[in-house]
Image (cartoon, rainbow, N blue to C red; front, side, top):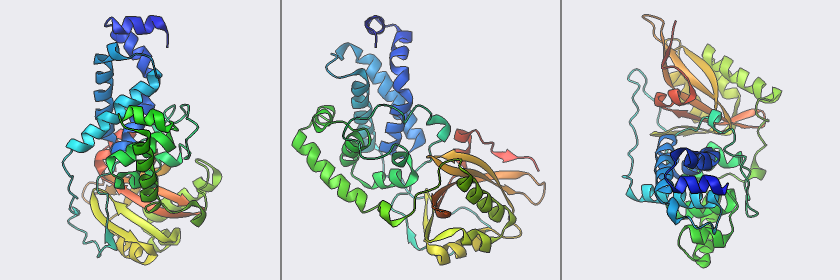
Length: 335
């Protein structure tokens, strides 16, 4: 940060302000996404935070870095958004030609959106404080972001600031206008809550490295089975404790037997899918397109995100087709 840029920005130079804040824009958006679990809400919170920073730049005293000051603003804007947000309702199953089987359970978190990997470049490579406990790739995974949404908002903020970004307790206390004791207490409760919703690392194999031959081989098998309608081959790729979820629809299917029943209901000879690859949350993902029998046009039906464990798929999360444009995917494909 140069003194000249700050002086010009405080004098009302918008281009100087953008130059000051642009290096932090992507990582702040990811921070808002972790807080809110929504790609769209994260973008709104980011814009709100930058506007607040622009309007409040005169009050920046330089006691902390500009980056820390921006994180303070973004965190509090997200907390405000969570306090004022109305509880979002689960969406009803809306495929009229398909009757899904009885679910294993109804999901706790029905409002969750995927985050495009194309926007992660430079967003999770920022400097981390000494308190960071999680790898940045783990902390953007769907499993981690989902577990965060179960935590109360303040606990969520404390855990992200302390153990994902690595800020000291005293820094977090300053950001939240709180005390160190309160921050440490919230962190203790947040850790317990997170443990209750994340599988211990020791219980599962590490996923193959992104874009590695092992990942590509597994993904190719999944695509081949899904597109050919071979449910038996598809389920053979899944772990015994596989989970299929589909926010904002609350239905969840756990274990191979229940997942087999679900996929048998939606993958049929009269329902032919095409999968277009992309990546979300650091994981393999696909736009799914269903061929129309009359004109052959393939209409986008959603976005699948795979969670890999060793050489198997341990979770499949299906999102609504409204997510397709965020990944540069079309609403439909020609026949």
